[in-house]
Length: 319
Ligand code: ES4
Ligand code: ZN
Image (cartoon, rainbow, N blue to C red; front, side):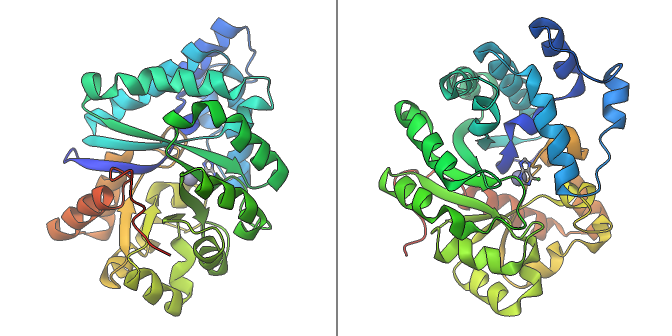
């Protein structure tokens, strides 16, 4: 569906399509352990979040220069525009690049070159959100935040991603306090594979303004009531949940119940190259499988703009 929408949960590294991966591999002299794009696509079968993350991090080996990141972002923006995206808040994982010897400045300047032209070329306004890898240490996250210092004019906020279970939000309390002092907006993945309690912790300890995924809040009625009352946006990613087997089938997705409960739900693509679709495809899938009404689709599209950081200067949730 191509009606206007904002995308708020999108990992730019997760938009790397097999064709671009092979093109960048050839250009950078990187050998991929797959015969061709077909064989690579065959590997996109995941049992859980970790099995996806293993491939996601391995394929990043092809991203080396600022131009590589510019091309990656350009390819995403073109696809997003075709599916009605007018505003995109884009995650990137600096630690996944610095660990390979690619400096954060290369990443930010490469992505930035594409984002600078996005309004004019694609009619898409953009924001950049740097994510900390929660399976790395809090010290590493703090080092990353410091390394981002010279580029903060290009960075709107911080997020928390990667392997969730065993890495509760509170591990990053100091990092998020520092991010707040620097005037950065705060979000975090919570309740994807991890328990509802991580959602509460992300709100209360990290002071986040949105929850990425938040799917497992439905296991905790009191939390659902709070999220609805406080209008906390949840950036849901339905196709991602199916591909990572968080739910068995799309029919089992609780989106209708979440909307009925008054939750501020949004629909997003997460890692569209890996999970079988961009954000318009996610909208199509939930519309068809969950029989959403035009009114519900309008609510989801409206929520995506309301939950965005387009109001850059004033944090939406006072706490
Ligand atoms: C991610 Cl689906 C998902 N969950 C957590 N971390 C991620 N990084 C990229 N995609
Ligand atoms: Zn995600």
